[in-house]
Image 1 (cartoon, rainbow, N blue to C red):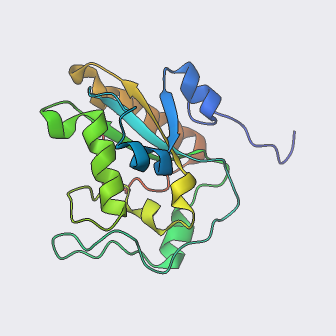
Image 2: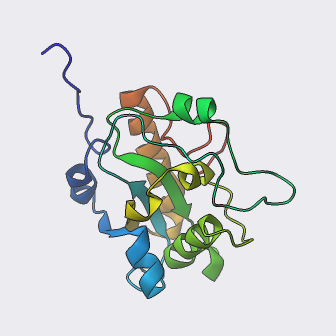
Length: 178
């Protein structure tokens, strides 16, 4: 059917992610309120998801702070070029499990703290912090054994790229999250 959006298994909808074993789908606001208590203390893959919309409103400045002398704010035209129409996945993150700082709960907490303007190490996904209404975005996760985390994230990114022709909005093209 002409003009229809073809949905790729595993990357198109929250239902696809649930079929792959993703859980949670908790808003940023709720995670902040409870200290991310619902996020497992385990290695795994996590995603930031939303209901697909047309081009969103981008904030002129990121809510995240400069990190090691680098400004997280991206120009609006660069953000618009990265936007992936009809995609529910905005970011794929990994928590490889090599110590407490690299487990799902801590990775999500650090990501949120960075977006709140706190000077913590979580540069990945920084484009999220220029989206108006970011508090309504959701985080979902899937626990994985430490030796399978990077392969699981790589598979998810590969499926996304095969379907959409580019990486998720907030995954840097040159970064190797997986």
